[in-house]
Length: 419
Image 1 (cartoon, rainbow, N blue to C red):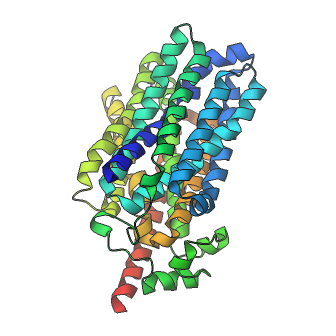
Image 2: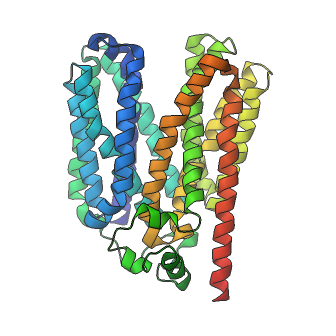
């Protein structure tokens, strides 16, 4: 039963990745038919992102009210409907309207599934599941490219993905009995002995103005109350910085290679895709590494590799080093997101993990929304050659905040030992 549920969650993570890369692949064909300019794709992505942020913040309430299984069903179903809406749209305004359920469906399922896996499965599954997201994000453009090159056009590409999402919704409905959580089964693996009723966890909750974690599972608390928990602000900043780094690296890699390093556009596009390949392959490999290395050191390892990658991109030692740098940045990003997610119940207790993961996902999407456009302004009005130096800024602050978070957790552990 547990293996079957895990398989379903793996498929669900693939489905999370499928829609994420569709708009970029379809837009060159879409904008001419819709009578818009190339830049208008940004408006759709912003609407999707706002919906995702809202649903991420609401994920704690929804999960506590309905459970992770039902939230996943509703969210995937909403995404399926939105994708079908895209497939029958023939105006930009209608696309913007369908972008609302598109984003709302993504945030809750993302936060809910991440928390469910963090609570119930070892770290290796978190890495492999996020690897499956990369698989979905890679398959989506392939399906869209096949549809656009044939008679189905971009509408057909969205329709194919929506059919897959509808099928997954039906499978998830049938799997609802598997999502029942066993009493006391909070985390698997090396950190399994986490009891949300531990005196230290109670003290943290009371200090933040919350009740005990046991009571917390039945109530919703304000963001202000949760922010008072020691280490939460550092964790949110880590997520903001990580997604700022990842999204900036991916979005502007090809432009940097072409406009600053003189690489042909076709080759630059292929090199940029190696960044995402680095993330996907890196998460697959990291799944094995996590069997020997804990989440905290996985984050540090990723940050170190990403730093080396940025240095390779910065140094003018030829295109071979440039390509290596892009791959290394992707490999460095690979363990950071799943490892920070997976250690959230360990850092803050199982009773608060859903609330905090929802806020972390929202912080991540805010970073994705705001920082890449900021670098676009810098690239246009100052110099796109600042690309590697710009990436070093969120990496630096992510390292500082993650180390501060670890110090907070160590202090909690010392308090626990003294009780």
